[in-house]
Amino acid sequence: MSACLLCGSESAAALFPATDRLHRTTARSFTILRCGQCGLMRLDPQPTPAESRQYHPENYWFAPDQTSAGRLEEAYRRLVLRDHARFVERALSDCSARGPLLDVGCGGGLFLGMMRERGFRVVGLDNSAAAAAIAWSRQRVPAVCGELEHAPVRAGGFAAITMFHVLEHVHDPRAYIAAAHHLLAPGGRLIVQTPNAACWQFRLLGRAWSGLDVPRHLYDFRSSDLERLLESCGFTVLRRKYFSWRDNPASLASSVAPGLDPMGRRTRRVHENSAARIAKDLAYFALIAASVPFTLLEAAAGAGATVMIEARKP
Image (cartoon, rainbow, N blue to C red; front, side, top):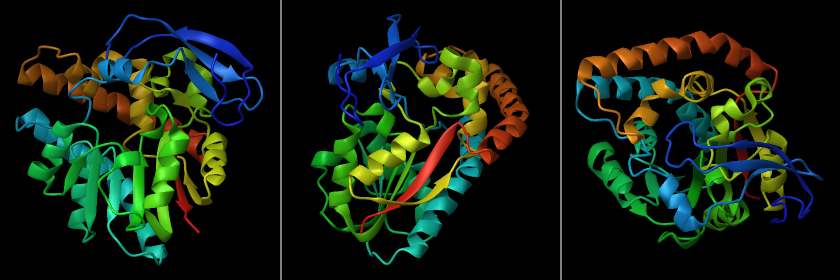
C-alpha cells in the first residue's frame, strides 16, 4: 500500500469498491481508500501511467461538431463557463505579475478562447496532441502538447496558471503544483479546481457520486486537503469558491443518470441520430436544471461538489 500524498502515513481504511460508471472503459473493480491519519481519499490500486491512458478515451475533452446538437452543446458550455472566466479575470486584475495565462489541461481550448475574447494573452497545454490542435484551429489560441513538468515554456513568465479538473488525474499532484510555482512570475496566481469530496452529494450518494470518476481520478480531495497541498508547495490561499454552473449541477445529474451524460455518450460512441441526441441532451439539461436548487444550497454551506481556489506565489 502506498503512502499518503499529504501526510506520508501508510495507514488507510477501505471505504468501498467502485468501477467506471460513466465511460465504461473497464469492468475492473477498484477500492476507494481513506488515509487513517489525515483523511485524504485515493484510488487503490492506482493505475500505471500506461493504464491511465487507456481509461481516458481519445475524445475525453470537449470538442463540439458542427451539427445542431453540437452547436447547442457549445452554446451551453459558453454560458456555464462564464463564472470560470469571471473568477480568473478577477485574479488577473488583482495581481501585479505580467505575462500570459497558461491553462493546463486545456482540451479543445473553449475556456481559453473566451479569455482571449476578453483581451487576455493565453497559452494552452494538454497531453493530447489532437486537443491542442483543436484549440489552435477552432479557438485560435496557441496550445502545445506536453506535461507541465516538462512544458516547453519559459519559467517565471506567466501571470496566472489554471488547472480545472487536472490534479485529481495526475500521479504526483505535488510535482504539478511545484512546476506551476516554477513557471509563475512572482505574485502570479494559481487557480485550481477539483471535485470536493467534502460535499453533500458524496455524503448522500457514496460510490454513485460522479465526482469520484473511477478509475480516472486517482485522488479525491476535500477543500482542506487541497489548501494543505498548495500551502506545502509555497502558495498562499486567497479565495475559495464552492459553486460552478458548469460542474456542480452536472455532477448531480451525471450521478443520478450517467447514461444521459453527453460526454459519456460521446466517449462510449453511442449510436444516435441527431433527433435522438438532441432529445437526450434536453433530458439531461432538464435534470441539470432540477439539480440547481440543491447544488446552490450545498455550495452556500461550503460543501459544494467542486472547489475552486485562487492561490498566490510570493
